[in-house]
Length: 268
Image 1 (cartoon, one colour):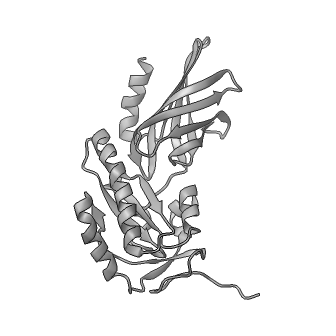
Image 2: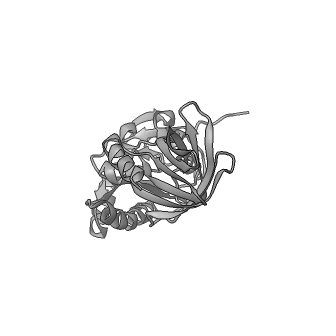
Image 3: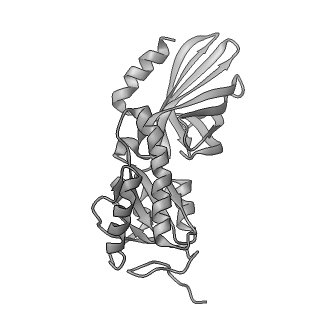
């Protein structure tokens, strides 16, 4: 049986062919801050259309190894694209695929991203734009520019009949918007404390979650809030009230914000 290795070096692949390689094309910064910037980005991309680039294995990018969206995207039919928020503090991501025209793929992917950035920029108090990160088998960013953390540092603040305590650990999540996305909390020793899931609309900074912790001792609906983004993943809080018991889960916080958020929550 003949086995085909699917990758692009200066030409387009057949639609639907999965690739384990990408061609890295240094391209400066293909960034749009509003719809008026989209034609300029399209023109820049067309200049790189025939460039061979440097062939890279996707294993160099955590985004395509740890992120379920990234893994799915690699298998989608062309034309396809990924856009990420810019600068890194705005680093959410989105993508499109199965477009018949390359320019339409670029424009619609970036426009979807800009719609998200309008809300995110207001929430963060920052000017957020969108950067074209990948197009078909070309990738325009280095691995450090397309990070993804499947495992997020987290702390559970528990109030029950025994008093109040903190549990240090980590959360595992897809980081994707949509319905019933998994969200689980573990101790530092890898003992599962909470099973859960969350629902988050693509243009929202808060949603609904459901957590079942300590074998059902603290269980119920939770308010799920996104405070910001770091390394391609959200950070924020989830609060569960179960009668006299309460659990506040703080996940993914950057170190410089953790102590502030911790103090606020412990004061409640």
